[in-house]
Image (cartoon, rainbow, N blue to C red; front, side):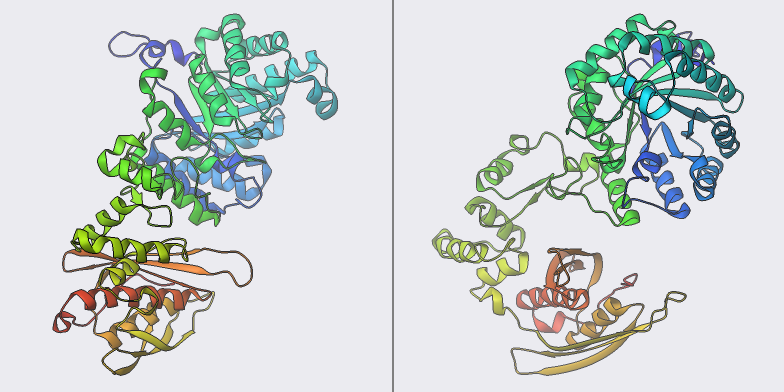
Length: 540
């Protein structure tokens, strides 16, 4: 299929019209999913595939149909369901594999069979036991077979970066003649360097017969931490398809990270001179969806989508950010789907960030009082990883953050009736004390223990809030690991944040909810606090 030479409506060849666009080939569902700890069932695969379609991915490698019946069914369902991207299935250069992949892709609007065959001396001898001629003949026969079963064929020379360049030219030239439309150069074991990658692609584009009729692609692994750098070097050398994964997941150290490549091309657009079809505002939501589906979180310092990617604790950095965002951020958090930059208040923070956060919380502090507040803040920051809003308000009001009230938990119990087959219900009871001497006990039922305990706290305190955000995450490891609950609630046209830490997530959630109630009561006359906390949708 010589699709690259077709004419567009304005008479310009498609190859020249799209020469400045890099196609994003996502292999999260194949290379990423086969890595230990990242396995997904069919429903999860379809959900992520739909998110990738919304993200704007050009080609989705949906799986390896020959690997298992479930993988076959997942590829087939994705092929039936998705409308925009090309749906691709991986296949060895084996007739049975090729036929199975073709059947899995039958319903796709646009289908691709991705053939791979080792070409390096090491693989030829120890993996395949084949000569150069046998590898070449097998590749050609497989491409010709696959052409009859799909819209287009991609051929990958496995371990290409450790293959003799002259032999790689011979294999790729034969692949083009046989009908391959995309030629992929995988750095299968993450061995090469950016300079070597650029040199190899320059050589291939100059010497492969028919190179002008195909798209050159690269697939880089991160064993030496250079997958993204190698992919960008390949783009600079004329590659117009990059194979990558969400969060960089994949075999061993992973694949090139989709979000890092895309944002590098966006932020450094004048340098690279190319773009993609990715809606970058959906990068963070897609990353978070993958972590939910696999249960595998990303490192806090992960570029683009990590918790610290747009967070600043250093006083020098915070001061600069308050003056001009560009001092310490080269992209806006909103561009990747994150709501805002986070100035984290901790032991490294300075007076400017502290004053800014206090003002955001409604506290205008006189300069004469700032020295004392800052000293108390630093003392608390030395004991805690992060100083939260409720801590700051206690300091500003002259209270002890460790004893901030007025409400405190005396007793908490939660029972769950949830089963595997049915959601069921849960119950919770709380006993609270107030600084005015009251002791209040209440009970409630809910969809889960967290929901039930929140409803019990509503009744006990008479709070009226709209819960807009709920997150629980581990802050330590081991059998006695602590979990941190973070809540955001809407009250009086303002967002209020609360956090709680405990080895029990139900207790952590109760502490977070009570922190919000306490903050509002400290700043609001008691009569305005009316029933009841709206916790619809909280089923934990």
